[in-house]
Length: 359
Ligand SMILES: [Zn+2]
Ligand SMILES: [Zn+2]
Ligand SMILES: [Zn+2]
Image (cartoon, rainbow, N blue to C red; front, side, top):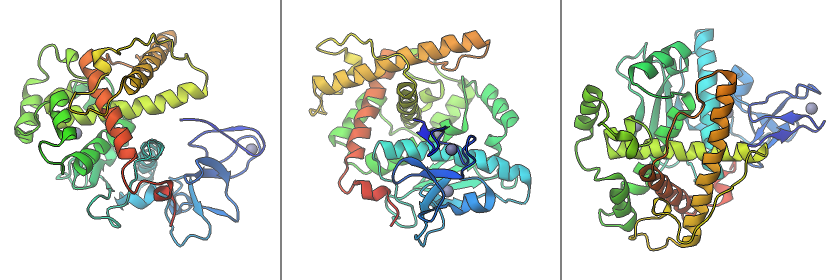
């Protein structure tokens, strides 16, 4: 994520709602990708104005009340308690960051209401009130449990599930992977090149998902999972492998943008021709060129340089590693395919900047 500048010259952040130097009320204008003052041209999203949980703006003249992120909400939590409002605010902040990166990748995100075929909606619900609800994605609806915004709750879950890290942002990124798979890959013919490439890299996803999850929760990941998967959960089923890989890819894109903004270590990559096999696409995707593979190779090298610094900083602070992952060649190849899909989906027919604009 990049930083922004107030009219007074002070630095503003993606999360800012007021300039701490000049006191100006500001918000994020997703159409211009800028932090702007709230004025006669731009109004604050209704969830910001009413509940203080959103800092995105929309044209003052727009008949819409909600920003491009909040309008994707189908269910929001009961706001009867201050704690629920605070937790919801953390959820919305994570969701906006995901949506910003998907916009940056130029992947259009219609709402489920406007586009029942391809659209997206969010249910943010309390599982304490409704224990039958599980987090996940189904037919364009991403459900997240409000309790995950509670640090203690999330840490208990993290430890019980043996996860190296567990964040709200990670949840949203992971579920967006399921949504995009459903939208762009599930409807392709079984022998379509992209579907074929998916199977080659992630494995055959046609075996029972519920059996696979049950097996995973009973037995844990197979020994040596680190050689194949980015996280232990990715070993549960090719769908989860994909969602974990996609989440990691989106994290890389956001993290590299942040690193570039602050002048973090540059590439330093020694680009060989041909690039290593872990940076190539399956042969069935004949569109791949050495140039694209090398571009990904460079991206990956920049990321590895950046996370090395991040982890050394963690050690300097005596804190847990900020980046507790190892990217094996097999995991790199999965990220390479995610990179390819992102470019294809970002250039999909009908994808223009106007898709992100307020209509
Ligand atoms: Zn200012
Ligand atoms: Zn909003
Ligand atoms: Zn999943």
